[in-house]
Length: 183
Length: 104
Image (cartoon, rainbow over all chains, first blue to last red):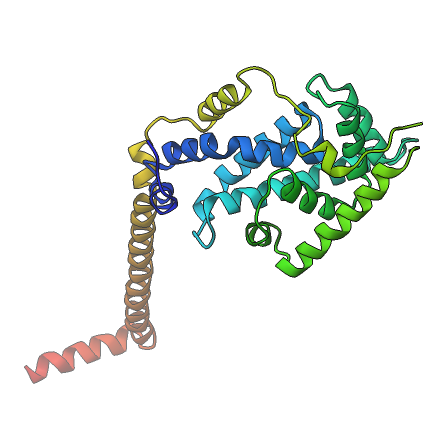
């Protein structure tokens, strides 16, 4: 059974149908949300935790959802905030570590059972880690998912012009990194 | 030393995988957490019950305020009669009674 966004919003507003509608939302969006998170936190376990928090937060706040945006955009926004909060907390925990946050994330990714990239893909991930977090989000959304700038604007709250510029700079930085022989 | 690469040669495949049946399990476990049981009638009626309790509270409070007010008024009247009687002694009282009797 498929529901339109409008139908889902009506169901979510009805306490007797809310859980059923939300279960449908989870099943429809979990993969996209998972990959959105995973490309930022890199390991499966962390992505799983952040996705769990994302849907729980959305479920708890569902009564306050006023339908001003699409449900998927709203959940993407929650996932983005949860991911950035997770990375900020991780950085705080690692403050006394010798390795910087990017090195730590990369090492965890390489050691993760669920990383199956080749040498070039690993180097690309390392290059992406040199970008500031917001720029990483923009690059990942555009490069791997080909999300339109309009959709990105709705999720990230940044203008289309700024997003295009950010992506362009990200590509340049990554290309420079990939052309270096040592890192 | 590390090889040089070109972004367009690497492509945009995501170099990650997930455990088998991960998404199916995630959705099933999450549904368990939010519980697909029908919402209990108590939960639907709860706002109306809160409102009914509030109205009952206001009703009883107004009853109490009204009772205290009328009791006070009565007490004031009784106090006034006692005061008037206390201002005249028994002899005057008897005289007053006799006068009233003689008029009749």
